[in-house]
Length: 255
Image (cartoon, rainbow, N blue to C red; front, side, top):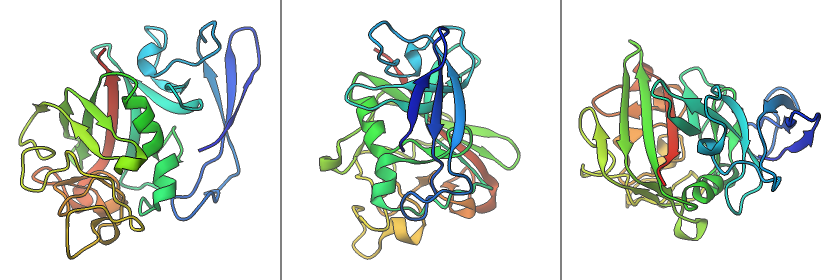
């Protein structure tokens, strides 16, 4: 994901020119060459952007912001303010009728794809840089066809570097129902990320990402998979096929 950021007034209003990329192949526009997003936010005197959504001004509204984790270029993200006043950085959003294919290459999952105002993947490289700069927690969310929301939250969350396969690291679980990421026989915790062109799962007979059409932290293969198009989004015991209507992965700094 690449973009240009220009300051347009004394109010620290920045215009971000963000290409929307297809999730099939390299940087091919989905329908238009550019999306123009106006982002209003206070910028520190060092001219660095906030390192995550927790660092934006309090009482801000949910919306598009520019952040800059340590070691990262500026990133356009969606910041979500929940009903309890907590601020979360959205690293994934997916909907049943998404235009994204999600069965994408290692390179595209590395740097991200989609539209932050709709469905998108921030990128493994940027999720890694975001989550290794401090202590973060994560909330995985799915909404079913009856508008019931189910979530799994872990008190620590990070993604390793590319040299370590962008492996998923999770802490203690809170949520309703079974812990399907760390406690079942097909765990996702500590799994490396897999795509159709980089099979790092634990299955000796299948490429899980290729078969189930979406990059993910597969083992043999999954109990939960939020990266997929339509019926390829699953959460065992909660929803599957046409019943999983939307998903989110949100992270929040805890210290």
